[in-house]
Amino acid sequence: MSTLLALDIGGTKTTAALVERTADAARVLAEHTVATPAQEGASAVIAAADGALGTVRAAAASRAPGNAAPSAPMALGIASAGVIAPGSGEVTHATDAIRGWAKTALGAELAARQDLPVAVLNDVQAHALGEAVHGVGRGHESLLLVAVGTGIGAGMVSGGMVHVGTRGAAGHLGHLPVPEADGVACPCGRTGHLEGLASGPGILALATRLGAAREITADGRALAAAARAGDAIAQEAYRLAGWATGRVIGGALNLLDADVVALTGGVLGASEAWQHELERGIAHEAMDVVAATPILPAAAGVHAALLGAAEHAWRKLCA
Image (cartoon, rainbow, N blue to C red):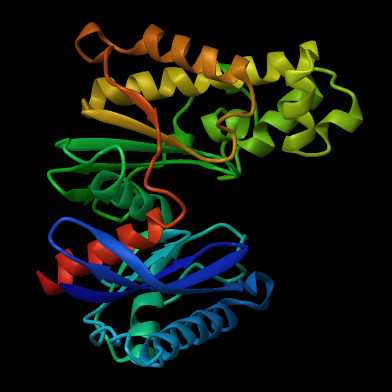
């Protein structure tokens, strides 16, 4: 049995947790969530994360009499937004969701503050590892996690190892080109990428371009409600987004040949039209040899990224 600290840093919230890991399971013993001071800069975000970790460690140490306190944590695993350098744990590239996050020495900063060895993963990569070990990937040799929400990303786990790439940038599925997005701006600064068309914000923009009424493009909930109520433009936006996303997943299966695909993110469940066209898109692109690959909702739950970060730290630093 091992005890580890885990941290999940996102653009809106940061969660710290104490994780107990055994040979065949893991569970969160304590957790604490704070708002991410994203617009105050990297130093403020690191300070908030350090404070959340301190709160979790203090809570674990002060358990009620009769409840044995967990052992001291062996390492800290971090899941963070941005591209993470595999060796150093530095954030090398990031969007402006967290101001000044790029070039932040995240691993070194928190290793010094917590006096622990640290391993850092991109948040989607950590989610993928958590899903592979504790979700629908359990019992499979490999898993491809696809997250469709504010952005579109993916994580590939094979043989128990998450594939991060030479520079930590593996898994940017949303930055593959699709013809349906021709001329559409992508948040990365290019045009024609899947994310610009089929992420949550991309679908809202698509519906606007198709002529949707202003009130149904106020946010994703409004657009999803309109699609469920039969609004033709809302349904068409979800159809186009689902089709394009499915085609990219089908192509990814041709490249990666994963045992199973897990889907997660806020766009899932928004529209039956999206789901139907996603399946059609996968079938259109996937070669016969991979066409029967199971496509399942992610099942590891809200702690998936934390559990993945803890698992990564254990395998890299403690095993």
